[in-house]
Image (cartoon, rainbow, N blue to C red):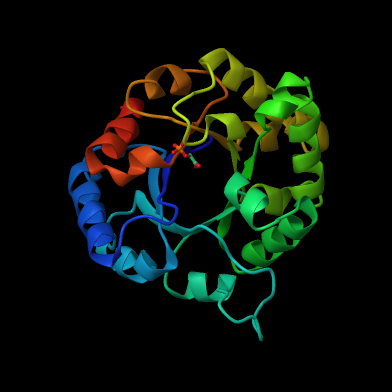
Length: 254
Ligand code: PGA
């Protein structure tokens, strides 16, 4: 059965010492709380990543991830970080396609398809983010947008590679706004995503795909969201910067 995952996305927050402090608190609190097929993941800035991997040694249910990777294997790309480098320090995940990368860094589905390939080739698991803007939802285009993000971003993969993905549905209007999608709105899209995976691959692949919800998720609203049949956890921004809140969200599955 598919994994339940609560993943934190620290974005560009916390300096090195602050990050180590928050992560140490998280480790201390979650070590007895993450059970069964569940996993807690923190996606930190690159600066913190190696140290956090070291701190997490021995905790098999706690993993680390990056928030981006370059599409090339290596080369003259000043300022960039490769999937191979991320793999080499022992991180397990890479967030790709976050709406902030799409919006501020011009990342398109076409570029993301290349990044997905490179990340998978380096044996890392992409957390692939998709979601519609408020304008698109109001124009009733949300299903079309989600479908094109899947088709253009990841549906070129064969089933074996697709099975390494985690999908995160993050309505852009809910990110960092304090406005959460209702559990019905989120479930409706998650069920749609799973149905598209059935159509492209198979029922078995779809049943094994972890689909996270992201966007103003917090300890208060997580229980109702995570109780939906197609919501397998969350991608947590703001609330992952506070160890207590993040751990309370992790514990929703207990
Ligand atoms: P938020 O961010 O929880 O602060 O809304 C979620 C995300 O961007 O992944």
